[in-house]
Image 1 (cartoon, chains in turn green, red):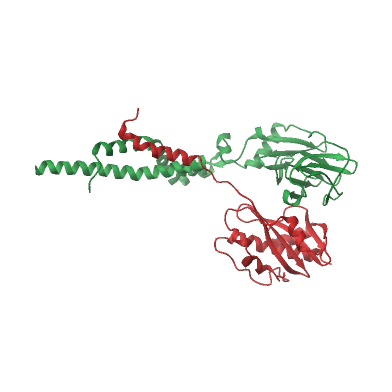
Image 2 (tube, one colour):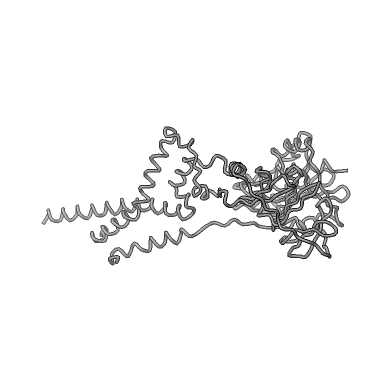
Length: 252
Length: 176
């Protein structure tokens, strides 16, 4: 078999070595640590670093939006989840309107309605597929009760919030009553959302596989694994070429 | 400047960067709008109602369904002895929305309305959904016949089997 010229083999070997060196080092170090998870107690170490948590879709307190309900209670929104007094109640987009009555609190998002009991328990989550309109733009109050301004016009709903019917008439929309959580409440909400954080074992495992950086990271780690095979092949090819030349020199 | 011999390495690097920008998008397949499902399920307009779940009913639901069903009330549609239910359960990671029509304690029809998982969508086909026709809930909260699974869609099959038991139970709670 005719081998490529030694200079080409060496160039490939050198470039692959340089480019993959960092990733190889990460693979080696994380692999070594993972092999001794129990002894190092990696499972028991929780990471709360905001950047790491963000990689796992666990945003920090900066993205919390909070609204006042019934003077004493709060409704917060964080990462597609609604929290009633820091307790998760339903998955939903950001609220665009809140209608509180003695019977229930209705929270409108652009594509769903969330009904909560006066004590904040989930009564029902009504998704877009169950509504007679596509997009809710505002939730207000009219002469007959709540009024929804939607992409299909104005609608109102019966006192049990079951059946919607078109509405004609005036209505007013109040701004959402925004509120601030104090440090203790924010910490409680983040605790409910993030739990204890992410274990160091999980982070190292995802760093080892490249998953920590999404699809691109995984691809880079795949390429690094392929680079190892190519480094072996180019190293052997370079060695074979040298051996053959030495044999030729000896026979001459 | 990269020497000529070294330029052959560039395509590999470019490929890795190009692949790195890719991603997987979640999708939602609507096979039948819930409103259309309700319309097809009754001769004449049904009445939209809600079943409020008492503490006792929630405990029974946990027995039948195998877990809590979220919320304090469940919406349904009724005309005479026929009820229709639109229920959701997680297959693997995303909820599956299914519609059930029940009359006299027997399932008349089951349809997968919205499917959000990346695998297991075969459960929407009639060869699978037809198995649910005629199902009843027996006294021990088991279905009157076994539902055959689909390879690669086990979790979706399990979710729909659980939901059909729940729908039959809920019908029993509201049927006249």
